[in-house]
Length: 199
Image (cartoon, rainbow, N blue to C red; front, side, top):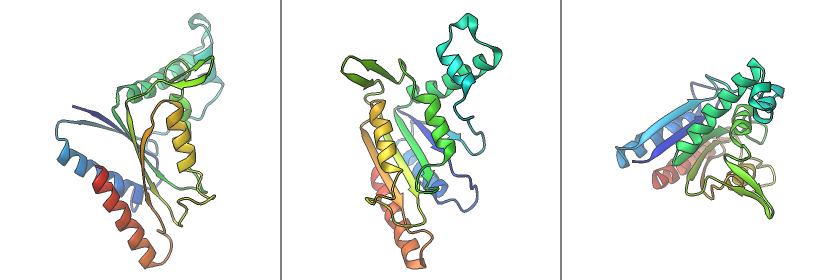
């Protein structure tokens, strides 16, 4: 049995393409892996606070010196990090907002990229500690950006995943969604076809 962690980040609930892709993924994955456990964390419904002094204090101060707010921030980070550590497959669903990922997803990443837990510093540089895991990224984009300099989603997320030791990463882009009907339909159909192959 594998554990799958899905991170939703679209601010939209209705008519969200990334959420539609997530629903398709869950249906297909469950059909192929009925014994697997799937956990969904929705960052739009339950947003994670942005990185602040309380979280930094929770990480860096000795336990006896942490304030109540710092302890609360640390407990939240521990909960989010434990979910990632327990997962065998990480699925991130992300619409493209202003050429990159939603700020809610960035805030989540800021909670789980933690020295000594998901990566460590060594004499030869940082080393990821989450080896053996797989990541799947589902994106929804109004234009066509794959391979272009305007795409700040895939390069960033690939670097972040590699930084914590996840090198097996599949990207499924639904592109051209705000263009003409032909582009919208083509982009969505291509994404669904690739999703079926991955799931």
